[in-house]
Every structure is written in C-alpha cells, then in structure tokens.
Length: 73
Ligand SMILES: [Zn+2]
Image 1: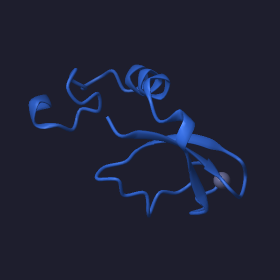
Image 2: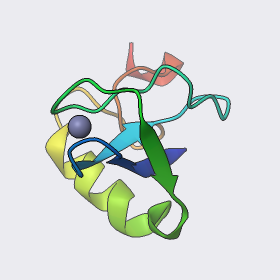
Image 3: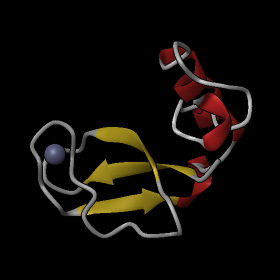
C-alpha cells in the first residue's frame, strides 16, 4: 500500500496519507489544512501501514486495508 507519512511545514503536524499513483499534490495537513507538506521518506513503510490498518479495520479486506478495492464490495 502506498501509504506515506507527511509533515506539515506550517504547524509541524505529522500524518499518514494514502497516495495513489504517486500523486502527492492536493494533500493537506489534517490539522491546519495547509498544503505546505513534505513527504517523510524514512517512514514510508511497514510501521505506518500497521497503524493505518488498525485504525480502519472495519470494512477493510486484507488486500487493500482501506475498504475501497474491488474485493471489498
Ligand atoms: Zn498543519
């Protein structure tokens, strides 16, 4: 899953976002809605994915972890 961790340049908030097709434009800070966010390269991996899966466990299948793939419905 293309889940990356971002950090807001405005307020310093860090958050994880699902990035489809490598597109990061349009991603905003969850706290202040600023678009000045940068991708944290070191965090794009398994640690983030585990946290993401546990937070959206309802409705998600093992294939997509987000409840949005074709096998979920
Ligand atoms: Zn922010």
